[in-house]
Image 1 (cartoon, rainbow, N blue to C red):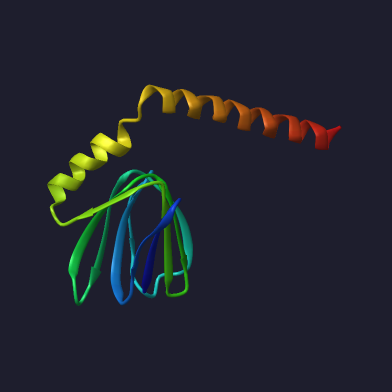
Image 2: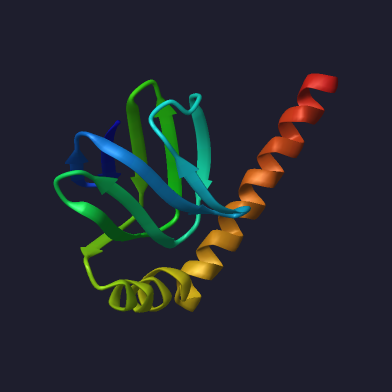
Length: 129
């Protein structure tokens, strides 16, 4: 498989010959092997693990985002990513930087959620009327 990790402002990594990928979703860990059917999955902040023959097992801390598998290509689009080999350090980074959102960001997300739900409600009312 070919793994491409995208951030809002750059391509974080492009890795060829990936033999397996494991990510964290709201439903738990999710693994991909080369012959898996195409799919889409929402990602939670956590550790993305991939393996190649050349590098072995590699860990990357990722923020929330989305994974899309289409054929041999796996695209992971996340808000932020931190690479490293020390799994303990990466877990701390996930807890510190990704999971513990500051209060302002929580308030902004709450306002956006209310705006989105209001838009959907008005849109469905418009189509009924």
